[in-house]
Each structure stands twice: as C-alpha cells, then as structure tokens.
Image (cartoon, rainbow, N blue to C red; front, top):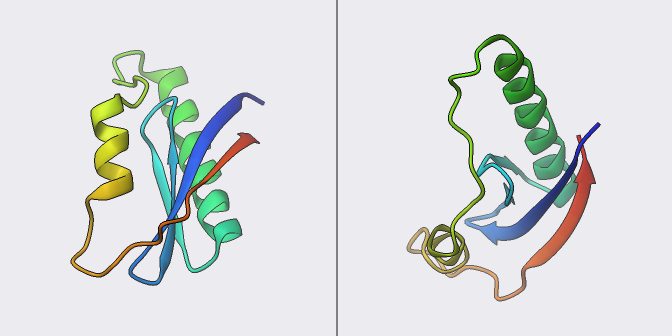
Length: 88
C-alpha cells in the first residue's frame, strides 16, 4: 500500500479527486466516492505498471494543478479545495 496526496474539487455537481503523484483522477457525487474511484484507478495503474514498465507516469506540474483548480466547465466551481493523504 502506497501513500498518495490528492486534491479534491467540486465542479458541475461532482467531486473530482486529483492524485498529485501521478495525475490520475477519480470522480463521484460525493468526496468519498471520488476518492474511492481514484483509489481504484491507482490500483489499476499499479497492476498494469507491474506488467508493462513503459507506462508513463509523473507528478502533476504546477501548471496542470493550476488548471485543475481554476479552469473547468462554464459553471462556477467551488472556492473550497481540500488536500488529503490516502493509501492505495
């Protein structure tokens, strides 16, 4: 089980969780659902990575994080963001 850092943001009625270590996202109607989907995506990436070392993965750049927090749908986004640590 590895340690990951994620940022949660609400957009267009959904919660989106972005993993800062690899750029993977999870989405759901609640924060917990978004985190669970993110954990499932991380697990899938880890399984593929074990069999194929050519998988590209790198930490999220500051520019990409800025876009995640500020650019999105035309609907207003939440001004509140949450940073969490999870194990997957």
